[in-house]
Image 1 (tube, helix red, strand yellow):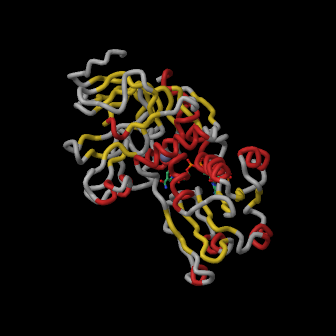
Image 2 (cartoon, rainbow, N blue to C red):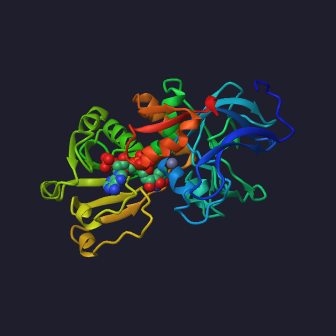
Length: 358
Ligand code: NAP
Ligand code: ZN
């Protein structure tokens, strides 16, 4: 589709969906809504495979909405615009991330923190009901097109390829936001736990911000990659000596792991008043002894993606610093295999679907 004329009818598009929790993804069709005044229709070129897609397809986070078309790391080209769209034009390179709506009126929305919307909650790109659009079910980027409100689509700077930019829409903003919030920069020591999709972008961004960066990985298998990506140091957490050597070292630790970890051991690596931020989502509650926090007034925190203005800021920052994800492009018929490889930690460092194969 290349017409600037807005569709007045819904469109049927091809997608990959899981019929029920834990089912493999198969090719199907879904309906996209007719364009409202502020909607754009994006022809999707690439979609990253985030570990969250696997959690949600597997039903790890409670009852999901099925059939489910995952995908919230989306890049493509604007194919159509609604009658009142002002921010994007047909032919523009755009991205869509983890949220596609919010109340727009609460204090958090007003401050550009739509991900923490308190006026009804933000709406996720897939597996959710759009409370602000008659509970319309949302379906994600493992599809050929997506219709989205213009305000939840971002400009992809020309310096970034659509392939390498796709993972930035989740892995990029999820790591950029806490790194900025906790002031990673020159003179600060940052550790990143887990060198996967989020972790490898965290290393690049923390390095570009000027921090001294350490990777804490399960083994030294990916050490050469970690140093090439911008880490200054690389340690294996399977080696108990790591915890002796690095005790009291880091101002900020970014945890991208969803497996259970020894939280106390990792808190002991923080400096006085340092912060351990959880991004990864283990399926069981985490536990810590309170003395691990009292000692050195340490903080344990969490962070969820990022808001609309910060996502655009992150994309512009990545363009300026030449930061894209390291991707392995896969065909749509390889999605299930790619899921398994992510679960086996066999990803370097983000699978990205070529949506033309859907
Ligand atoms: P990923 O690519 O699978 O990376 C996770 C990394 O964790 C792996 O590469 C591995 O790194 C490490 N790991 C795996 N199994 C482990 C184990 N048993 N013990 C210790 N470390 C292990 O996943 P991702 O896409 O980066 O996502 C990571 C987590 O963040 C997921 O839970 C996802 O749902 C969550 N997430 C959160 C947000 C948010 O807003 N907070 C946004 C997106 C994703 P090493 O091999 O280097 O150890
Ligand atoms: Zn994600």
